[in-house]
Image (cartoon, rainbow, N blue to C red; front, side, top):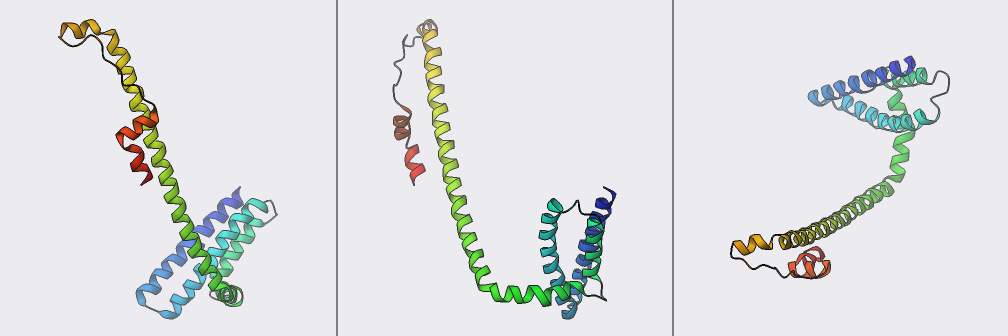
Length: 186
């Protein structure tokens, strides 16, 4: 437990905040060399974050696991080892360069599918909401008709007809009369 707390603190402080500040400084001073260094770091750190999530679930039981994570983050950052630059140049850059077109196509497809999925969910949600609203309106009108028949004497005193003839229709007929279903299909 203590190792986990120390590991999280080191990763947050040295793996995230320290590089974020130096990335800010590189952008502010427009130092291209430092800018490229920190961009490589963030690309490697993104991969590290994905791997960390998986390994935290599968091999966290391994002795010295959290200590190894601390050492790895320090190795990535160290100006002497330039670990992030080494991993980027030797592994990630060649891999990403060879698969760039496939990755771009996958991202475009994922965007298109996510848009279509959200539109379909929206249509289904509106359909359910509309059906619920019409159903509630029909139930409310039936309830009013039933309570209205109980107070026929009150209506007669006010000079109103003693009975009200209920409008009998199904939910589908009610939707057609109100034009609700036409709105949903459009």
